[in-house]
Every structure is written in C-alpha cells, then in structure tokens.
Image 1 (cartoon, helix red, strand yellow):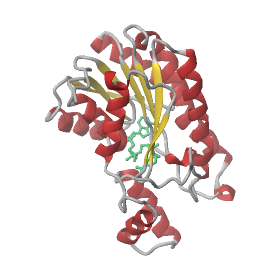
Image 2 (tube, rainbow, N blue to C red):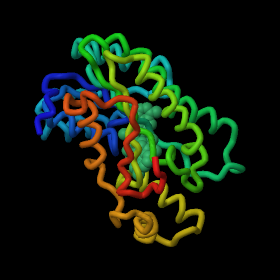
Image 3 (spheres, rainbow, N blue to C red):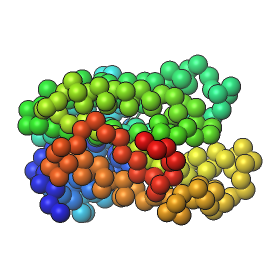
Length: 262
Ligand SMILES: NC(=O)c1ccc[n+]([C@@H]2O[C@H](COP(=O)([O-])OP(=O)(O)OC[C@H]3O[C@@H](n4cnc5c(N)ncnc54)[C@H](OP(=O)(O)O)[C@@H]3O)[C@@H](O)[C@H]2O)c1
C-alpha cells in the first residue's frame, strides 16, 4: 500500500529508541523526512546513524527534553528551520516509574504531568501553525492503560487520561486542517518494558527476566508481547493519506490484551 506521504516532514519526539524510533523508521522508509529526538546525545546520534541505513527521506536528530517548555520551542523551531514546515507530529515520551499510589511522591506527580501531558500541550501549541499549512496529522503515543488500568502504574493510569481528553478535543478544534489520533500500545519489547520487568524483579514479584515476559504474555490473546515495528506501522498509517477520514480515535495495539468493549 502506498502511504502517499513521500517528501513530507515528521517530528517524532522521544524517538532515539523504542516506540518513537519504530514510528520514525516506518515513516522514514516511506520517504518522509524525519526528526528524531531524545535527551541523551550519544543515544540520539546512534539512532540517527542507524536510521539513515534504511531511510529514503532525510534524517536529523535534535536534542531536547520535551517536558521543558524552552526545549519544545527549540525543537519545533529547529525542525522548521531545517525542513521549512511540519506535516506530521508524533508525540512520545519516556514512561513514568512503576509505583503504587502510597509510594508515589507529590513531585513525581508533577513530573509525570509535565512529561506526559504538558509535553503534548506545548508541542501542539508550537507546531499547530505549521501543521495546518498543508493538512497535517498529530498522533499521540500513550498507553493501553487509558482503557484498562495497569497494576503498579498509578501515574500512567491517571495522567494519560488527560492526553486522551486533549486528543479528542483537538480532533474537533483543529479540524478540518489537522487530524488528531492516538495509539495505545500494550506490552511491547523495548527498554521501557525491560525496565518495568527489572523493577518487578527488584520488588521480589518475579525471579528473572523470562518469567517477567511469560507473565506479561499470559493474558494476551496473541500469546506474545508486541514488536516496536508493529506499533510504528499503525502510526505511519495514521499519518498517511490512507487514513484520511480517521480523526479523534484511540487505537489499541496490544495483541488483544485489553478487555474493554470500547
Ligand atoms: N513499551 C511498552 O510496552 C509500552 C506500553 C505502553 C505504553 N508505553 C509508553 O510509550 C512510550 C514509549 O515507550 P518506549 O517503550 O518506547 O520507551 P523507551 O524504550 O523508554 O524509549 C523512550 C524514548 O524517549 C526518549 N525520552 C524519554 N524521555 C524524554 C523526554 N523527556 N524528552 C525527549 N525524549 C525523551 C528516550 O531517550 P532519552 O532517555 O535519551 O531521552 C527514548 O528514546 C512511553 O511513554 C511508555 O510508557 C510503552
């Protein structure tokens, strides 16, 4: 299927690894010029160099912490300086720590709010004038935790609901020029999931990594955790002309894990 987005420009945040990187890869292999982003310079450089091996569009990296307002302004301005506009904004950021409610400090709530929600608010505010120029798209990478809460992830279960409310509001306010959708990953093989499994090992809930993967896979109808590229392909579809009548939806990419009827 031709996604018909060759030559467009995409800014994908939190994309020096994991799901953001997989989304950038899917777009870059369709001939889209992509901006990768992350906080760690070396990791970002490695990601740019890896992606250049298969990209058919241009690839650059811009270091920025999307939970900080001035970094977001810099990220959007540098993207426009480099490519002239932004056609696709894909918002992604590292997940919050795995904790129970009574272990979670006030400052951690503030941090999660700035990182998970305010990053999306600021990125959208800064990019909107560029996105609307040629009929752009926004895809918010959030979590299946908005459909079904996940044990020991109170920050994700709570704060990400705000991203969904924002996505739905924007899909109406920014229409018809900009389409806005979300993807809800379930368990997918990235450093984030490795980190969550390691935190379970430290808590004594499980004894090793494989036990962690088996435990996560047990409740998934497709009997395995996902691969990052399986999420990236859905993001690329939502950015493309092939989804031209789709806006305001949140698509689970979870192997059927969520039991929610809606
Ligand atoms: N993987 C899963 O199973 C899964 C399931 C549901 C939801 N999610 C959510 O989906 C998102 C992506 O997950 P992932 O598994 O890809 O995570 P990951 O493997 O930890 O990758 C996160 C990426 O974002 C960058 N990043 C983190 N914080 C950032 C910030 N403040 N500003 C800019 N870049 C930042 C990281 O690089 P630096 O550290 O160098 O900045 C890294 O490149 C997370 O919010 C996660 O909670 C993941």
